Every structure is written in structure tokens, then in C-alpha cells.
Image (cartoon, rainbow, N blue to C red; front, side):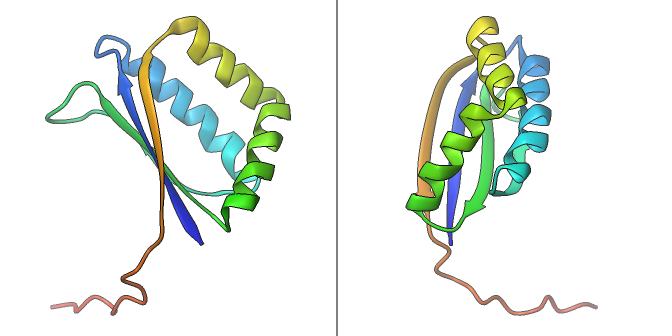
Length: 109
């Protein structure tokens, strides 16, 4: 299992558009084969940074997943929404592997 971290630089005056974009992916990503952890938008600190995070089995599975996203009607619509509205200024993607698992259960007071 690998985790994809997408770092977005967004227009600080278009945070609502980014939130709509994120909610759309919240529907599309799981139905196309990735385990969505979530999309995260600005709250405190930077007004221009957002993240999307999801797990996928492998880079080969990622390639097939991207093809399904491109064929999904809401996926295509969401890509077009971002292109048309230009609220995403920059997007960087990195794949990482969790090397600390398994984690211990939390200790409760």
C-alpha cells in the first residue's frame, strides 16, 4: 500500500471553490478504487495550501485508477471545473509508504 499526498497551492480568495472541488473528489475517488483519507483546506496559518490524501495498492493500480477517474463523468466535470475556474495555482504529488506501522493502540486515561 502506498499513500498519495497532493499539495495544492490555491488562490486564497477561492477557498470555497477548492472546498467544492474537494467534496466532488470525495464522491469520485472512492468509487474509482482508492481509499480516500481526505481533502484538507486552509484553516489557520497559510491561506493558500491544501492537501488531498489517499491510499492505493501500488503505482500500477494508480495508473488504472487515473484512467477510471478520467472516464468518470463527475471526475471529468471536476477536472474541467478546476481548469475553468483556475483556483488551483500549483499541484504537486508524492507517493509515500507508511514505514511506522503497525502502531500501538492509544493509551486512554
